[in-house]
Image (cartoon, rainbow over all chains, first blue to last red; front, top):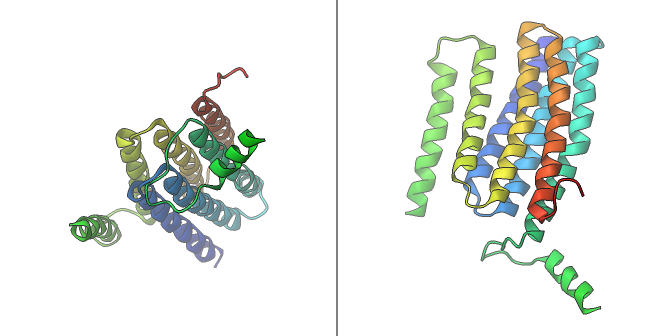
Length: 113
Length: 112
């Protein structure tokens, strides 16, 4: 029974990984790709690690999987945010059909003051 | 034309997934690893063809997160504990490497 629940979580995680990578090659812009792929891949990898935690229980490998899951959950949004900020500061343009760019407006307001 | 390209891509990915699921004589763990290898191939396509350095940085970040899941699946099917040690070390390294790449994209140097 434990194996079936763990396999369910692992299959859900791998399908999220696949959808995230399809978004990575499908979408037109750096920011869109970052927005699609980082969230999907973070959730997918956390699902895989949670399945491993259910399989091994409270042993050494299970605790390591839980620790790794918490670490990825905390650090993946930070690295994605740093990448988006770096890409915007390096002067990369948005896609031509993008609607609004709040960061650029904030930078112009700060320059005006 | 756009619809034809979209449909061809969908057909290739769906037929690959169905072929691995139904017509391949390997065990279940190897099938899951093959699905993750498809994800690695898609990210490698973005690294090879990305028009800007930011795209390549994003794809490198994604690969660094997915390797952790790959090590977890290896630990799941071989019952070896030390694959989880590799996973934790890889998560730390890929986080620091991505932060360094982001700083490099901003135009600063590594020691600031």
